Length: 404
Length: 136
Figure: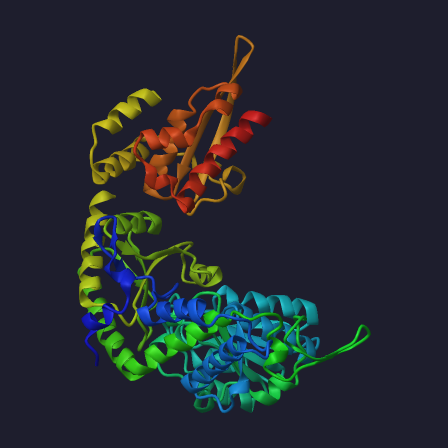
């Protein structure tokens, strides 16, 4: 394991005071803070070698292109993809999933085909499927999860069948912390003749993911949750599948030959990266993934697992604290309610104590309602979180209780 | 209570804790909105918690006056609603049009509620009240 107090020095924002109190940032599941090396990378690119990629035959452009394509290789290595052409840069995970729904869905979905997702999906892995189902005549099926937020294999298998053309499932719920066994689910999906998309937004920061071992067909995640810049995301897809898909956005940097009458499109991944890409952000993402790889994903997992156990142990000290999502082996995402107190009220007092938590429906409104609530508060851990963060959080909760 | 009395009361409270305990207390002492009025029709959109505002109109010497009942499912926002009701109690449509809610909140030392996401809730309430004043 690593020395978390030393690691924290890499994140300048963590040293800031919030409302005069130590910055107790417990909202990394929404967006993570950035290490200095990522911030420095962005500054370095803009100040020393900025130019458009894939364009000019001059030094700066060549250099930016080299770094941009190197970032693609870093992503490839990070998730162990077989080929760097299987990595497509998008704006975020939402765009990555929309890309699959639009490009794969329009080509392969027919009326009566089924799309299978879980009850635990956030809007990004729900709405694109609702839309493409309506457009193609396919049917969206949703398999149930347990009242404690656990994955129920029998529910998945009940709805997985010959009609299922694609399974789209989160590897870790952003509300419940539940880890879904995507490797086994992929095997079962393939047996049924379906492809599988893994939404790795949450999972990718907490554990090592190997797309070849999982054998998923698509995998999506966003850069801002992986300690990288906002405005960049990744879609992984198996090459043959990507190659069979038409593009859905059109413009520069994605064409092979253009006349006024006709255009032929470029190879993958360029076909899916129309226009000037978020190149600085992509390179920044590469740096962030490198940072996590240098720390060691197994070390990050070990640190967060220990801290998760510590946090959950302390929750019981707070009377009326109810954790929503208690599946075995869950990760460091804790949705909760304090009995009789509105989550927004809790969050407000916590904020005054320098503690940042998320409230509301967490972009997963049907899931929050499925668990029996309209709004939840959520605390979540990052690789830099400490026992002190948890202690301050617990004290702030106790204080909040005195107000209501 | 008048808005001036409210400003005076807030002046006596120096730290945020006392201010918020007072706000929560204002909310707790406000008459609750009857459950049958807590419907989508009376909901104010754009708030992070549920907020309802229900107008009533009275005529005095040919002049129209508006009053409001309100509620929220969150305690602090309920207190904010109570302040809003004091600010807009028994006002003519013209008076409602002229009230600068944000200035009053700044005077109360409630700048927290002027931050973008929270101001959104406050602004939504004020906008809804102005809309009622203009249409009723």
